Length: 301
Image 1 (cartoon, rainbow, N blue to C red):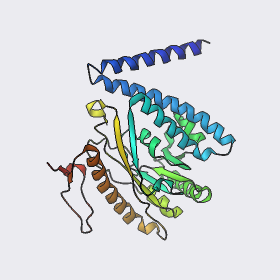
Image 2: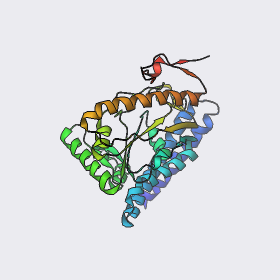
Image 3: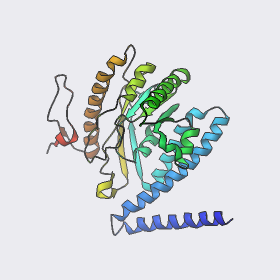
Image 4: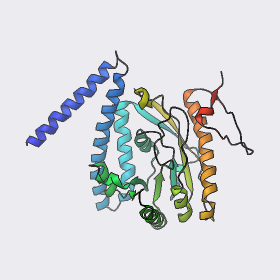
């Protein structure tokens, strides 16, 4: 009983503090940053708890493959209510319905967890670093929902995990969602870190298409260094699937390079669309694909 009382007091105090910071933000705008951070943490906790129970129930009825999708949708709804942050999915060719596939997206910050709420397809699993297994609630949910854990410090284990993922893709038609940059960029401008090749090796090994997902740079909504966290909408552009049929390990380097180049061009375009500006690109390759980063970008007057 004492534990329940403690949890109730904590919930009441946490909610009151969050609301107080939201009210203070009407006078001190930076307080909005604190309010949304607090709201995000509690939203993540609530969604992780939902995910644990949803994963158990869905496993019992034989539908655990959609557990991560269901939890992502829960987080999407809770965050929209508590922070006012939403994403707008642009998917004219219905590429999100491609199954199975390796979905890849640019990785900016912790807010990408919310981005998944809007762009995560059904019958798909995340890959995650093995240390997350020990995280309460979130780790439990990821284990129960079939996430693929990779020990990045152990190359042999990583290869085995990828091999298992390829088999899962082929046998269960289960897609995989990955961030090829490997870590968050925290960039204020539309930039991509170098791509790691794991996602591309996986797609080639499983002989399934790659579906690039490009999220506009959202530093106008969240920029941690500047203590900026506002409500707003961020566009997500789903690109056409890239076939890997007939490709081998020898093609992975070129596949990685060309995909990154394509995503960078789209990242610049969708970011400037979100900001209502016109991009002027400073360099072009022989095939017309931009070879720039956000730091090369100039805005037309």
